[in-house]
Structures are given as C-alpha cells and as structure tokens.
Amino acid sequence: MDKRRRVWNTAGLESFRGSPWGRPAPAADLTPCQPGEKTLVHELLIAAALLLVAEGIWPFLSPPSFRRALLAVARESDGRLHLTGLVSMVAGVGLLYLVN
View 1 (cartoon, rainbow, N blue to C red):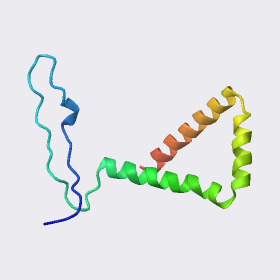
View 2: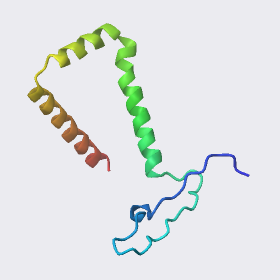
View 3: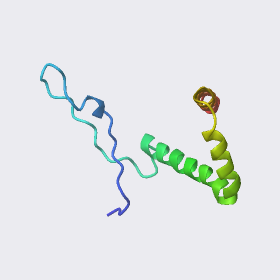
C-alpha cells in the first residue's frame, strides 16, 4: 500500500450545493490523482512557500535595515500605499502573463 498522502481530484465540486430547483448536484469526481500529478492546490502551496522564503531573507540578513524600512512605510500616506499596491499587482499580473 502506498503510504504517501492522497490528493483528490475535486472536479465538479463547484456545483456542490445543488440546483435551485431541488435536484441533487452531480457527484464530484473524487478519484485519487496520479503520483507526481500537479494540482492547483499543490502549485498554490509551492507559491506560498516560496513567498515566505523570499520575504524572510531581508529580516534574517539585516534586521535593523528591515525595521527602518517598515517604519518608513508606516509613515507613508494611504494614497501612496494604494498606488504602491496597485503597481505591485499590475507588475505581478504582467509577470504571470509573460511566464505563461
């Protein structure tokens, strides 16, 4: 018996709640994924893990400069932070477009 944790294929779960007319929703395909098969959840977990590693490098290497940067960001206006967030999101979407 394979002792690795099983990842299940959840195609069809979007209609889990059923229809408004009282008919049951179609059964979800809960077959195990093949070993090594990449799922969306797996890819998102990898992305989150890499994000945590990347975000931890600066405070690990230089805590004083990281603290100064956080204090500088805390002093910025809301409008400036909104603009920075917008630019960051657009850059991320652009990078995703280029990679895919």
